[in-house]
Every structure is written in structure tokens, then in C-alpha cells.
Image 1 (cartoon, each protein chain N blue to C red):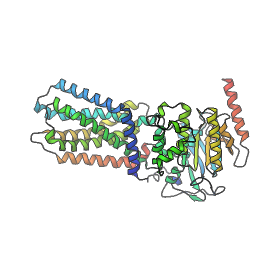
Image 2: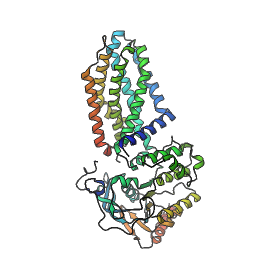
Image 3: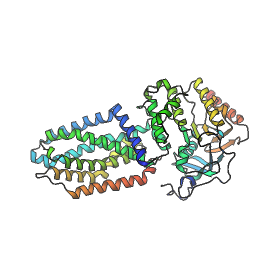
Image 4: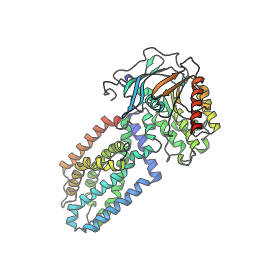
Length: 224
Length: 275
């Protein structure tokens, strides 16, 4: 079975189980909405301040969403040792990671798309004129977040202090993604908007490097 | 793709695509039943270490195609570890394991597509229905017409009427039956059973015993860990006792496995009585 097909089968399973239970998406959306509303009340920013500080707060909220959502990506496979069932299948081990990365990417993107209008209203930022550029930045940043988070979720799931370990591993590694995504978003929300190719290239390179690394070591990550 | 990068001490010939392995002496008869026939396995000086603890200590064992081997021994004797190594779920710390089909060495992908396993856990998704679980695994195994295969697999385990029910609504015995259906989905040439009778009622145990017998007769190689005396032991052609990660008794391919099985059952009942 090809890598793409096996990943697709695993992605379909992830989507089916999540949309059936809605545990993860529901909880995460509520959590990040609370975070973004609290930030808004705490800082009470003006429109110009929002354009400067808003992107940082927005990506911080996405990071919280990621660390909450990605935690259970591999924990769920431990309930009935279903990870072993996946590893018994005659598929490339990376397809397990790739399927989960794709699912996490879609879940995070959905949370971000729900959050964006709320952010725009609360922080008085016009996002509609720059929606395309903003979605491009979101997509590249979210690929990095989902790829890194999925890999570290696989590592942390086998550790004893797994709930603590994932944020400890994830946050330092995600610092470059967070900085690049925030800077790129600041550029997009600036008046006039300016899409920084430097930060976009940086994000794309991070995604490619991390996905390649995950493909090379994926097999070992999933071993007991 | 990446199995060649293992430590030099370790030798997993069949797990290295660069160097396909072969069992030095071809084992027993050519396989007959199933789409691919039974697999032959050879463990050579296999050692497994978890931290400071040695779970297996230099186990060497050759299992011919079509053999039905029962592994007995106390908890922690190494039975599950041996099964996990055979399923390629964990690597040996030292030693090697090789698989052959007839007289031909086969690739890792081929081995995986011919292995079915029932583990300690059910290996099933609670949020999926019985049918969805089987369709999912049928797709991962690249089976043609997965929905039809799933329906066919549910029939003999008596779950056809509960096909669209979520697994989380199933009893322990029903989950175990579904787990067995999952393991048999791809008509395996090597069936690994880790206390597969757990949770089954007497009727289910009887069915499992008959299924093992039928699979053995069709040429499938079966390696199972078992406790006490139960219906699944009727088809056993060879019994091996493990203690402290070593093989202490082996009835051999032509010997009588009953003595070892009875000895294990007596020891267990004695321990249960003492406790």
C-alpha cells in the first residue's frame, strides 16, 4: 500500500472518530475562545496596538490550542493499544504519523478559522481584505505546529509524565514557528499590508525540514 | 527503507531490505493452506532487555510452517515479549529473527501482511463500530473489497447482528471475538495469540479452539501464549515452557506437548490454591 493511501485511510479514521465524539474540537474551541476573550479584556488594546500585539496573542492562543489538542493524538491510541494494531499493518510507519499530522492540521485549522472572526471583532482588526494572505500564513504555521506536535506527541505518549513532557518538548522547538508566524501575521495586518517573503520562506523551510526529519525517524518514534 | 541502520550487535536479516535473510535449513513441509501458506520462523539467540531487566535470554527456536506452538510459563517469563518480537512490534536487543515462506525468504512487508495477532489488549477503536473497525484494518492490509471482507469476518464470530454498534458498547467477550476476527481478516500465515481465550465464555473458547484447529489444518503457523487448561490447547502440536526469559522445556515438533501443558496447568492451580 502506498504511503499516501495508508495516510489517507488513517486520516479518514481520525476524522471519523473525532467528529463522532467531538471531544477534542469542542473543548479546544471553548478553551481558545476563553483565552482570546481574556486577553482582550486584560490588554484592552486600541486598533493600532491590536495590529502590533494582536498577532502574538493570536498565535499564543493557537499554541495553547495545539498543546491541548496534540496531547491526545497518540494518547488515544493507548486505550486498547491500537498503535500496535497500526504497527502490525503492512504500511510505511511514517504513514501513521502523516495521517495523524494531516488530521491535526485540519483540526487546528478549523479551530483557527472559528477563532479568526472573534479575534477580528474583539481586537478591531479588519481581516477580510487580507484573508487570502492571512490563510497562507496560518496554513504554513499550522503545518509546522501540527507536524512538530504530532511527532512529540508520539514521543511523549510513551513516557510516564506525558502530560508535562509534551509542552516541555514542544514549546522550545516551536519557538521559531511562533516567531515567524507572528512576524508574518504582523506584516499582513499592517496598514498597508505587507506579506513578508522572508518569514514565509522560513516557515516553509521549517515545515519541509521537520517533515523530512519525521519521515526519516518515524519508524523509531513509534517503537516501544 | 530504514531497517538497515541497526546496531552492529543486532542482526535482523529479514528486517534489512539490503540483506534478505534465509533460514539456514529449510523447515518442514511446504505450506498448503490459506492464500500464502504458513510462515516459518527462526529465532536465533534472541535477547530482549527492558532497562536493566532481561525479558529474554538468548532464545533460539525454529518453528516450522503449520506448527501450533503453545508458550507456557509464569507472568513475566517472556511469552509476550517473544510474541511481540515475532510480530515485529519490538526489536530484539541482540540476536536475530528470520521468516521464510516455503524455501523462500520474504520481505518485511510480505511478513507483515501475513501476520495476524490477538494481543493482551483488543487493538480495537472504541469510537468505531465493529464493521468500521474491520473495514479500517482491511484497508490498511490492502484487502480487496474491505466492506465485504468485514461482513464475512463478522459472521463466524457471531457479531453480524451487532456490526453497526460501537465497540464501546460491547462486552469483554464480544470485544475479544471482534479482536480475533480482526486478526483473521487477512487470512494470516502466522497467527500470534497472546492469551486469546481471555474473556471468552465456554462457547467462545470452544469456537476459538475449533478455529485454531482449522487454521492449523490449513497450514497456518500458530504461536500462542496460554495459561492453565482450556479449549484452545486441543490443536497444540508443540509446547514450550519459558521461565526467566529462557526456554526450560520444549516438547519439540514431534514430541508430546501434553506433558508440558499439564505440568504448567498443575503448577498454576497449585499456586492459585496456595494464594
